[in-house]
Length: 124
Image 1 (tube, one colour):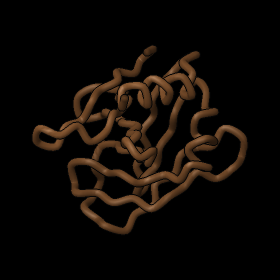
Image 2 (cartoon, rainbow, N blue to C red):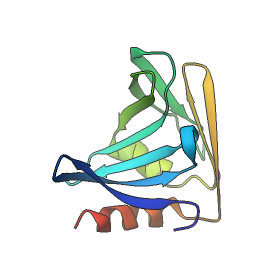
Image 3 (cartoon, rainbow, N blue to C red):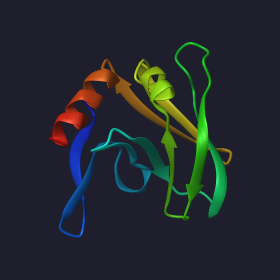
Image 4 (tube, rainbow, N blue to C red):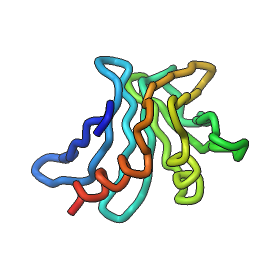
């Protein structure tokens, strides 16, 4: 799906969620949608810290920011449904900032709403 790969994530033998993944190596961003429709964003790790804020440059001025944490390898945070709908309107490039570190992901004309639909279909 454009620059994204849709993957099913397992915890042992149990499938727990599906993710849309973009980037390669250490620079991967994942958009996670769980079976019970909980949304999360993860990016490469920053300093280990349980109290961070993840900020995504908004498409129209509405703030997209939420609590995040990092184990040093990955940084992640749960994003509520309203902010996730706003996130889905981003076009061309996703810019995520956490702890002063910025990650950019070129998505071109790929529809994030379609990426989310495909990720949700993976959960079925």
